[in-house]
Image (tube, rainbow, N blue to C red; front, side, top):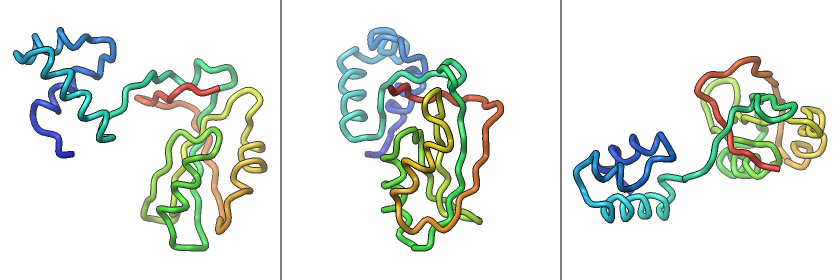
Length: 147
């Protein structure tokens, strides 16, 4: 799906996730049904997702880690998908540079970095090396809450 100007304007208004379709429609001078239809199409196509995001510090023991992963295979997309399914993983990026993947992990009480490596990463083959970066402070970074 290609985002046109109206879709982009709707997305800008949705940065405040509590704005009603009526408020957005009034601001953009379109009908509420137009906004609803556009939001539904963007959601169904996978371009947009609506969900609650929270500050990692608000979670008991919440800490973000970024893990740089070097693979011994070049099946980057498949490995990225595998990592994205692991417990605690917030995002996975296939990148250039000294790593093949950058994985953002939410650690919390009862799920430490050691548990992430021994219970989760250990199940994935072709991992050549990892380098962990603990995030002391982040800006503009909210994560989905999961149990």
